[in-house]
Amino acid sequence: MNFHHKKTVRDIDVNNKKVLVRCDFNVPHNEKTGEILDDTRIAASLPTIRYLLDKGASVILCSHFGRPKGVWLEEFSLSIAGAHLQELLGQPVTLTKDVLGEDCKRAANELQSGEILLIENLRFRPEEEANDPNFSKELASLADYLVFDAFGVAHRKHASTYGVSNYLPCVAGLLVEKELDIMGRALTEPKRPLTAILGGSKVSDKIGVILNLLNIADTIIIGGGMSYTFQCAKGGTIGNSLVETDRIDFARDMLALAKEKNVEILLPIDDLAANEFSSNATPVLVDSMNIPDNLMGLDIGPKTIDLFSNSIKQSSTVIWNGPMGVFEFASFSNGTRAVAQTLANMNEAITIIGGGDSASAIEQMGYASKMTHISTGGGASLKFLEGQSLPGIACLQDIT
Ligand code: AMP
Image 1 (tube, rainbow, N blue to C red):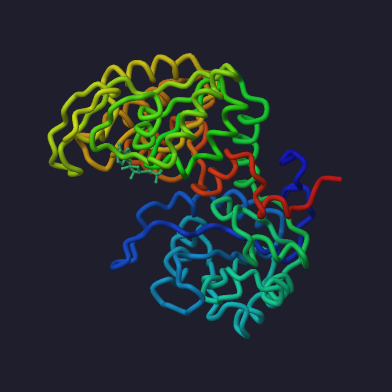
Image 2: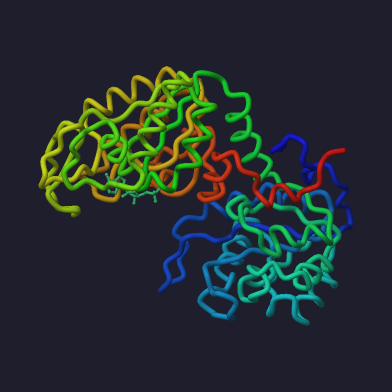
């Protein structure tokens, strides 16, 4: 994908124009109290919104929130996100009473330069996820441009992420520009050595990523639940650890391919294991290739932490996706924390965290500000690491 050639909000004249901004306000929240648990995605939308206001646009924001599945459900209202945004911006954000109904169209029509309107949850209408052409057309009719700033849903072909581009010129917002620039550069012209750290539970979720990274990375570090399928492929005994038996052949092929391509693959050499999947379980140190029958590996061990850290420290670019163990359990969070700490201390290197669980681990552990970039998209950043085209990006206008 040629992301350097996509127009951004900087390439269009928005003065006195109506600009629809597709944001990602799908923030984690407490379903009972409505309290926002992590406002990263809302905060990340501020540069684009401020830029547009500054340049004299009328700003019409839209987003999804949760999975109301095409039905109006008050608990999925964007009112909480709108109120928080209003606070962050210090200016009124008016929420529409419907989605592309009379109130929404009238409010959009009457909106003045410098004002902000927020359309209610797009997923209150089934047409959004169905990428309905009439819905896309109506959405487009509200504005002169669409600015796409919802990287978290760039891999979705929905009305507001894709269909709308048939009826309205679409350009990237500043957040999407940053995501594409940093991650794109890391994949196409990385400062080498480039190390990819992959973890999390399943090999099957990361097949495309492994295949793509074998063409790009110098080193691939594999930890977490997915490492045991690789240990099996090497002939190891993994006790009760997580394994995808139908992926062992794939893992074996990848180890062979890595050798052919001269890519180093590092796997754990020791693990912290337990006799049950529980936060109260007592960690037992085991050899990764020889885990007793009654134990399951839940974290990488101290020797592995050293092995991984030493390799990471020698890298100039590091891309990380997926925790090194069950970091939700304090006794099995050391591996993930140690890797996060190593990255946090690498001042010269480019450190990129690809959304999802590794992003929340880094936030929780307090290292977020030390990273070059934490992607706001879990699924979207995985697709990006797979080298796949993202519909929400592909449909943006090219610089001619
Ligand atoms: P994923 O959703 O594939 O990114 O995986 C994240 C999840 O993998 C987290 O909830 C971790 O608890 C889990 N995980 C990491 N390591 C292990 C392991 N050794 N055994 C079981 N689950 C793990």
